[in-house]
Length: 260
Image (cartoon, rainbow, N blue to C red; front, side, top):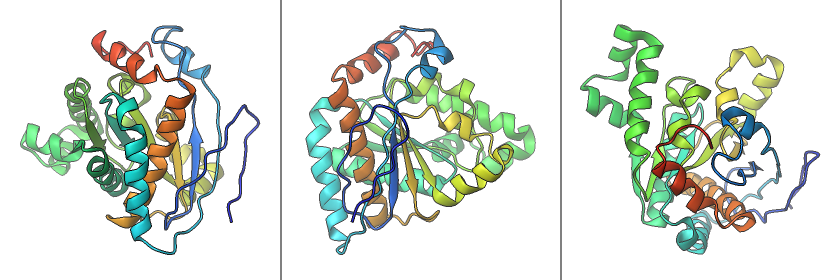
């Protein structure tokens, strides 16, 4: 069966796709238009949420079928807008980005890989030589370059490290659809002591919040199932406001100034 937990807010129910992991979906409504309100204040006014729990699938092959179905439904409406996955689980970010890319015909990219190719250094070397700030600067530079690309899915740094873990580094991501991949264990730990994961404040800027029932996300069918939920949630955002992809394109055209 499917149970629904709803926070006090205006909401619309999404029918969950079959998948092997239980996932909670939270949506944040987009702004009326870029620049409608200044920066961070604007995002404080867009809070609207809905949650649902997905049922387990009996056949793993159904996960990829559902992902492709959801991709076909929203492919034209996306208008080429890229999709970025953030969160502490780096392997999940990258695995889901790869599966979604296959379904949409997008190009899968990984900021950890791009950082090392561009800097000709491993992330461990960057951390050793320049500390956390060096990794933040490196990933932010990569995100700046990726901000103008279309038809890409992007997996980002995990572990609370890098630019996505800093709210003031999100300017280059607001021109994309952003998905926060979370897990129930991390949610529980943060509720017990929020100070242990300050990066969650930055992840809250994502438009879709997916909470997996377990921390592990295997490449393949599990990642495809999570990707199906992500695309269904993006489809719901576009259905509420079909102009969102166009607004994101305009935001990028105007230079990603942070006024989303």
